[in-house]
Length: 364
Ligand code: PLP
Ligand code: COI
Image 1 (tube, protein in one colour):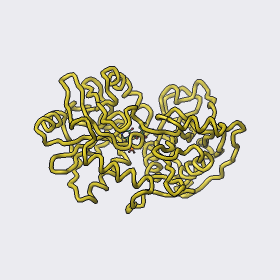
Image 2 (spheres, rainbow, N blue to C red):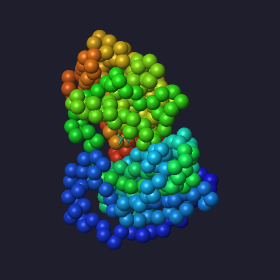
Image 3 (tube, rainbow, N blue to C red):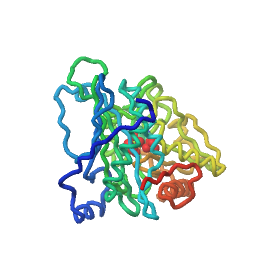
Image 4 (tube, rainbow, N blue to C red):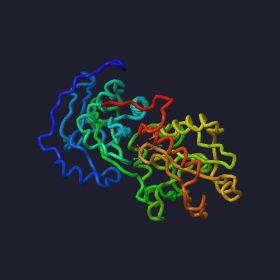
């Protein structure tokens, strides 16, 4: 199949959709990743058939052979993107084709078959349409989670010959419990996330599994997220467990770690870089060390820091905690540059401010 080829989906809607009352109750305060819609998409792949058996069906447990390769060797990738309910009543996706491309880049890194971008987009659009009642109005959104994993029952270590692509959707509000308040992050000096030549730039489950002990340490220390440093020198700031990171300097310029292959090339990161450049800000994709972070916060050269990602959107970082002492930024409120970039990004995503880059696509 080529990138533009489409596939026919069979529609097998659920016989037990949530009642309007149950849905309304679930959408009141959904939090993140707990409320799921009625349906899912599944598409199978086999070495001798390619992609086939595309279905829109009830969301339900998936039966797997206990020897399925993913359960042993972790061959799995995923994406995260959002659908929004715009003020004019239409539903729109934000840069979804970027997620399709990154999904395939992750697939290649994990020795998996790529999926034609058109099929990825079809899956997303069909699921959003069938579950459109689950797209929250107001501040929330529908978080779409496509993933793909190895299903072949075989214990030899080589790329699987069979895979399942699945797309589920979750009605979400704010990622962080504290809502808009600046978050506190934990600097781990013990664990790293990805090394050169590894899978840091791929969105594979293994990267997140490797981050969980550090994330648990962060939670134990009262923090929301972990900051990872580079694996070679334990010196350079890389990213958070599930977000990219930006620094705002006293001259209004922005610094963010470069894409060297060990961090995820965030789509929100790219959007922020584009918006900041269009505002006339100097933007540098360059290495920034933890020592520099400490020194710049102390001297006042560093004014703000923020995390960004699809789930988190833009979240101010108010404090870094570490074994070597804390770094405090700002006065507990969200900095002006962070707030302005977030407002513009969210405004575009919700169709409330002009979208000069054509990032938002209405799908119904
Ligand atoms: N870094 C990591 C490790 C992530 O999990 C995410 C979230 O997807 C990001 C960065 C931000 O990427 P994006 O803005 O494409 O969601
Ligand atoms: C996303 O933002 O889509 C992610 O995958 C990050 C995760 C922390 C939910």
